[in-house]
Structures are given as structure tokens and as C-alpha cells.
Image 1 (tube, chains in turn brown, purple):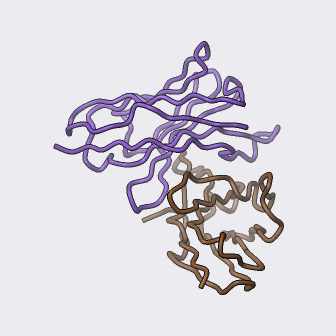
Image 2: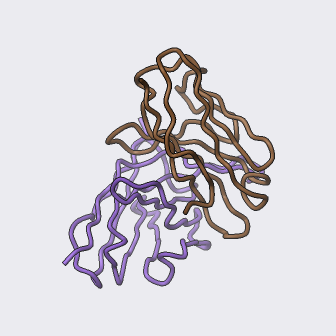
Amino acid sequence: QSVLTQPPSASGTPGQRVTISCSGSRSNVVIKAVNWYQQLPGTAPKLLIYTNYQRASGVPDRFSGSKSGTSASLAISGLQSEDEADYYCATWDDSLNAWVFGGGTKLTVL
Amino acid sequence: EVQLEESGGGLVQPGGSLTLSCTGSGVSLDDSAMHWVRQSPGKGLEWVSTINWNSNKVAYAASVEGRFTISRDHAKSSLYLQMNSLRPEDTAFYYCAKDFCTSTGWACYFDYWGQGVLVTVSS
């Protein structure tokens, strides 16, 4: 069971907007920056969003991040087939003294 | 282009040892903390270990503490993970990742990842 909670799956049709949530606690999400990683099928993870809302180099502005309280969110607007991937949130946990990841959300573009 | 490349994976029996290596091109790893992250087949990401830039701070996940040792060699621009007393549950793809932190240190993230190397622990 992951310290950060994500829905195991999400889906949408091309052009739609999809949101993926990441729920944590006061020892991680509340006090630390949240990052998001995208893992395309059969490839290594890559940085998508850092420090809650900053897009990594080359990431289209269809991707956006936000954080409020114990939760962070990743939104993808104008969904495209190439967005089909696994998405992970991650941050540092001050109580565990460890980096923690969400369980991952598999995004399907219908 | 920045590339990290892991090596040293393979099949090992339970109780055995293996050492993974990670080298970088297109970027200097010397000034950055480095991480190992693993992913069991079909599962999610799990942080394994971190070493700071000058090797005087290391951290391990509880699941590997006492069995794994992270190290680095600046002369070879390399990162290592010595894995001892391996268990079947250690079977995973192991990724090295470079760290980046803001100037205040408030926010850090893994900005570059290797392609991963598979470690299989089985008899």
C-alpha cells in the first residue's frame, strides 16, 4: 500500500480533459513539493511536472499540476492517444525520511 | 542529450549478490545527488536509495536497509548499488536517476532517468 494514494486507472476520449489525483498527508504532500512522472509503455519514467506545477522541458501545456492541502492533481486537457501511459506522483516524506511514490494511474485513451 | 545507463543486472539465486552500475553522458553527475528506484514487473515505482554529491549522506528504503549499499566514484563518474542477501521480492527493473534541487533545497526532483536494468532473483 502506497503512502501516496492515486486512482489505479483513468480514461477519456481524445480531446477530453482528465484529472488524476494524489492524496497524501501532512508529512509529505502538505509540506513538500510534489512531482509527477510519466511512464510510456515499455519505457523508463520521465519527469513531467516538478515542484507542484512546473512543466518539465518539452512537456506541452496541455499538462498541468496543482496542489491544495493534502492532495495534488495532474490535469491533461485535449487528451491525445500518445498520452496513454502510467502516471506517478512523488514527494519526500519527512516522517519516513524517504522518497515516496503513488501507486500509479494507468491512463487509457478510448 | 542527457543519458544515464545502468548495467550489471541479471539472474541471481536467493541469498546471492549483485552490483549495479550507472554512468552518465551529456551531463555531469558530480554535483548532483543520485538515486536508485526500482519497479517490480507490472508494479509501481519504489524508491530504493539516495547518495548526496560528496557521498557523506546516504539513505535507504526500509526494505533494503542493511542489505544494499549505494556508492559513487567521481573519478569514473559512476554510481553503484551493491546488493547482498538478495530475495525473490527484490526482482525488479532498477533505474538510476539524477537529482535536482532548487537553490533553497526546498524542492527536489528526479530530472533524468536511465533506461533500467532487470534483476531477477530466482533459484
